[in-house]
Image 1 (cartoon, one colour):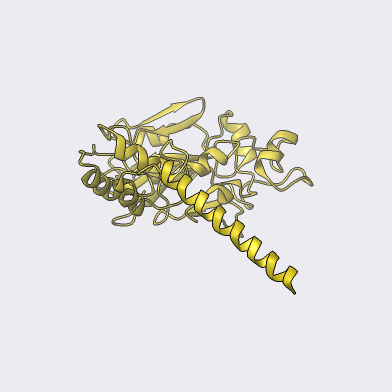
Image 2 (cartoon, rainbow, N blue to C red):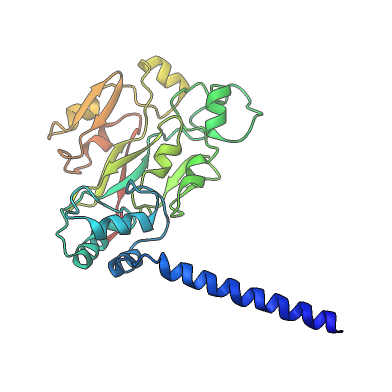
Length: 277
């Protein structure tokens, strides 16, 4: 019995000594953190997506608190309103930023792109890109395994069960670009959201093959016919390498190109009011 009590006393004494040592060390090497860092972190989404260029929200908050200027610093998750609040906390002005949203440059679902081969490997776009050409004859289109979905920290993208194509929820998308980086074929792109219209017009295709080949691969592929370019009164559309592209800084969202496209390759997204993207 005495042995038990002696052991308890000894362990308790060791515990007290260890606690005292840890307390002294903590006091000796304590680093006082700028209280503004905690306030800025409260404004940030906490997703640690890295879209700001820093390792995570804490690093970004620390950088903002220590910065002499917030020029070039932006958190897509916090958005313009959040950055204004961060500027108020840091005592710095914030430059106007352009909202962005992710768009899917492929509209070729299961009905538009016929299967020509079967893929039996690991169900990841990054893996299939390395080991094969995909299940369709289009080397530019979406593979549909959802690497982008896994990469999104905001639950803003999912795979449609019928088309097997990614669908972006513009009310959740903050334009961080994680999905775009995860896509091995570059199908997902970041598009500027113009103000005050709030409508994004983009080409939902990136097939750069000549018309006959593009038409054979997909029923809704862009073939570079130029009808959209002729319909545009703002000279916002160019056609290069058999694919159209739209300059968002010139586009006034009139919809003429959408109506003129015989292949239904040009799409529109109506951004929700007050969206973060």
